[in-house]
Length: 132
Image (cartoon, rainbow, N blue to C red):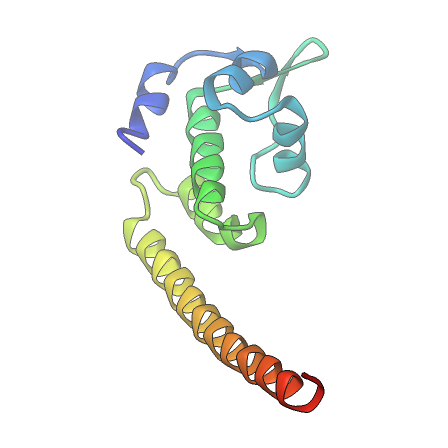
């Protein structure tokens, strides 16, 4: 993420339709509507029957998409996205804590996978010994 605030600053006072938001963030229109449904994005303002978004929405979708590329689920992002919506500054401490938790979970998974791999090697050895 080179400069995530670029999205916020470049479009701070802009009102964007969903197609432009999708183009700026790489999210599909369907994904954006889903983020709204699950509460990750606030209900957008309307201009007639069209949803209109702001620079903050661009920033939020960018954060969501970027975090998903690192394996975070939408559920994982709920508290961070809520904090971003409430605070003027990016909640760095909360984001770092979230990343550390993810890393710890990955280390546990890696240990479990190594254990399973050793067990499978043992199973192959036993099968060869008994049936080979």
